Length: 523
Image (cartoon, rainbow, N blue to C red; front, side):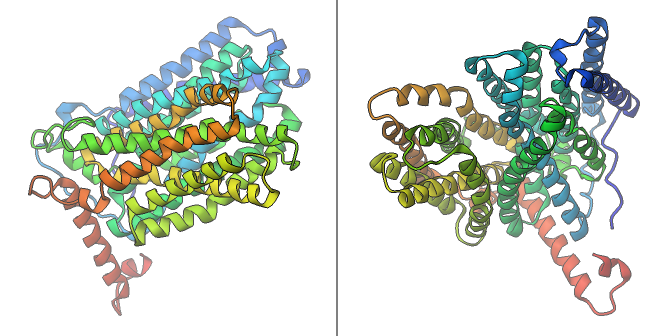
């Protein structure tokens, strides 16, 4: 097993001071939550000291800021020559996959928890349905901003450093469960959304730059789909177990041990060799942005695909359970549909990963877009009055299509953009997709009130998905082609892919050679 990666933190004293401040602020809020047990954990009824609360909040904010500054390496600290990238063994790659999968699982639990706290939150604060609707809107708006912020940060301060700072913000925002007012809860959920919004693009960027080209696509697609499912199932399991015992607030604090484990595991996340090498080649690499030159067409296609998914998932599917229940014909409820959507993601993502890796990345994405469009048009044709088997099959097809779309878009974006803007591009795609949570629900609610109801809504969201699939088929980029030469010269990405591939071949040859040493056998 290889040694731990080189130190990430240029200013360790400042960093650990920030961590200590953050933990102290969180611990104070946790103690206030425990102290509310005599009131059935209804903290809105507690007499809290404003000075203590503000001091705890200030400690959290200062701690995250200090730690963020501490991991930013001064530009003058760049070496004059590119250091040799550290050798990445098969064992260290497997460990990296496990750690980053865990990071995505923790990340996905955050927004999934919102679905389970709404009833208790509404009862404690005495809110109307319209008031509670602000919670997911604010949280998803936070994820949009976080995706843009952390994606850009990954290209400026590094993939590993960004994951660490986002994890610290996760830690600080667990105090969402201790806010005495609904306004405070909204603010903390927005900040929590900002922390969650950037983990996906940063993880995909690091995976793309750390795994062999032939294998990473399938691994990332499976990772994307299964962590989405696992995050929802973990959040629902915690809610079912803990809410009856300690109320809705405990679901946020229950994630605190997972966040602390993630911060500890960051020690074993290596920085991207591509990012490290680029730091010494900054003047040699031409400037590139998402909307200039050859990147413009990629960005428009990726944006259309992500936005279409956001409209379907955050807009149409949000209202589908309620529409099925209100129709009253088939006795369907929201719970089986939510369970079905999670369960279907497993085989759907497995098939998508195989097709993406063995057949065609672009073709696979077009197929899943077509599945989604087919399901929506079928619903538009039969409405909610069709036979139960047909309606169930159509709903299953819709969930399968949307699960595949979201599992594919992140890895595809990470693979087609150059390393210099890979994090920024991933953040942009994630932000566009999640923006559907901001304007998708009110838009679909307006369409549902128009003549045609669910049929009109299905057609309305099928059209942008069909156009996005067509644009991808006609103008979409191939990851294989994107990894090749730019203007006739090998790119830094290509050089590093060759290095990673050669290391893999060497490790396999060593392990298979008779009489190999213990080091080869261990790998």
